[in-house]
Length: 311
Image 1 (spheres, helix red, strand yellow):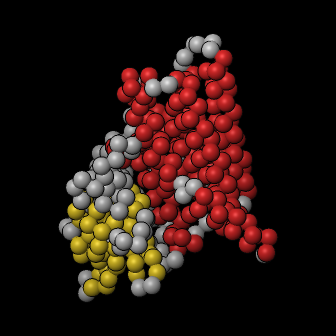
Image 2 (cartoon, one colour):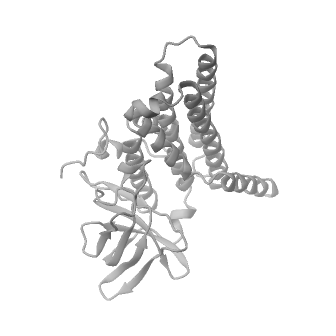
Image 3 (cartoon, one colour):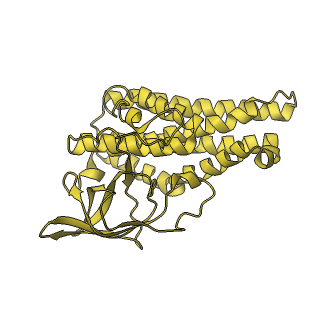
């Protein structure tokens, strides 16, 4: 099976070979994600999901995608759109609507969360099966438009359970994967900064913004590297993993916001109006970084810290 092209320099099959989280090479994995995002942020977002699916399958079931397959991870569970798993005489099937399914029209397979009784469970789905229908016009976004993250309707779609009902959320690797997303944010911010770096003006205000951008990116890169060292030292400590991931995402999100603001203030509207690549990149990164839940995530970090102190 021929590998699907989603990125100009990395194939899904190559991304599937990146070091797994907790294997002792976290820094290499996150650098590969960041490097891919600096080249093509949307393509890297798609590769991140595929690489995350590889890690999930390895950790939970000991299996792996086949060559040529391209996996999504469709795990958003808003209260107003629910997919339900039900048992039939022929096995488990899924019914309902799943929102924010990146790669809805191009993925070959997906890991899909669905309600199973009172719990959320994870299922592997072959997207060539009957009963799967991407919903037209359900992803009108300008930012991350190419991620094809619309809704998908499931009607009696065959599905295979991946681990026990609680495994997806309770496994240590859940938080390792959360940092992979931040690595992509960091790479996207580097690409936005490249537009400012390419200018040669000695205007003192522009230089001040360039210095501020460099400092912000240094902070983000440093926290990713420090977190990689800590993860490799204690990969199975889930409590430490949550705190680590929430800290990294908070720092990287703050750096991304500063880069977007400073580059815009330094260069004005010109590159947003005259440079299609830069304008699209800014729109893409603005949407992508909102995978962070902002103050809600910071409050969850504080709760996790309180729990650690109590223990």
